[in-house]
Length: 494
Image 1 (cartoon, rainbow, N blue to C red):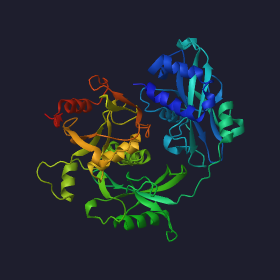
Image 2: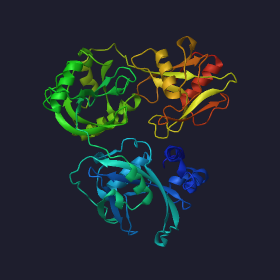
Image 3: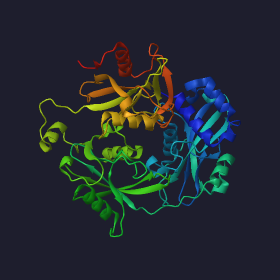
Image 4: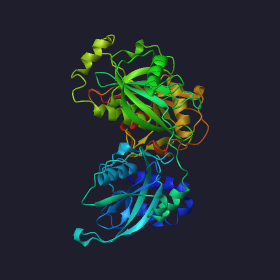
């Protein structure tokens, strides 16, 4: 299905928060958002529709342009949204690859512009009678990327649409609005790669992840799952020495064979881009037997489980790309057998359950707080849900208090929380079972804020007798159980 209206509106609103003086000139786009709804993403909406462009800057400061055959114009790569596109930025990267052959992994979002468009341009598109298209407007959302390397990038042109490419200095960029913004952009120095991390995987196709301590402001990515690794020190002759030293110091872990998997880019707390050398190696041990000196715990996770974790998108993408690069048949056909060979046997039938905590926040007028999940969310996109999170290495009430503060800026004291419902549910046969704990906050301070707009796009108090249709099913069941005074419900079990 096409990208949602909410995703496009949120992206435009975020852009205008940085460029409020452009509200008037983008009036046609704002009017179309109100008038056409989801249809604004469709190329057949001839009152005007959204397109996406990729602005790619190489290490020499030059900007990529392509010659479009149909129009004869020299422009940045870009084009229409397709049903399979997961985000506007993904549309831009797809069009970059289709038109020039440059793969998405060859570029990285410009620091500070990971989730917001760099420029928005409205221009007229000529009629194409042969294709039955009248003249119409394009609302072009442009995303800024940096090329990783100064070496010449192999180019494979989409010959039916692109006649050639050109790297132009900023002062010769064809779009005036884009040129003006690029000229004001501070130059980004390429820092020396001084960090290294390890992608450790086993024969079951699982990856070893490290749960970091929850010390906000003191460590990078607090309370998140990450790779083992760290920064280069004076005694490290190479970055391979860095990653081997970090593995030994953090976990007493020795991996005989490590191979370079490339360089990734992440943003630190100050917004600066940090290059990280990635090394990959195979290990089939039990992480519970390692001596962990930093962080909370180590555990194996399959790539299909990553969406359930508190983990950086860059780390998830890296793991999935590495998994896709492994030869077919690398993991044994019977993952369970291999698992049982290397770990202590569990009691018959024992399965680890995912514990989720949920906030039932009811105002004196009886209305209940729900959040609309972001359209790009891996779980229940564009669907209403109570404030919730997964319980990590912490108590359930500690998790609830933390999630309320992080997601909505609400301050709740432990003594003001009571358990009002438990729901034991499973989505499909053979999925991991889930235990949902619903807590009522008797009192709290603060009003709900959008602290994590990439996860939740709005908070609204709803009448529990008139809940929205597009609500997470088990959330509806739990709210009905709370109103009926039931403490426990089961759903999804045969």
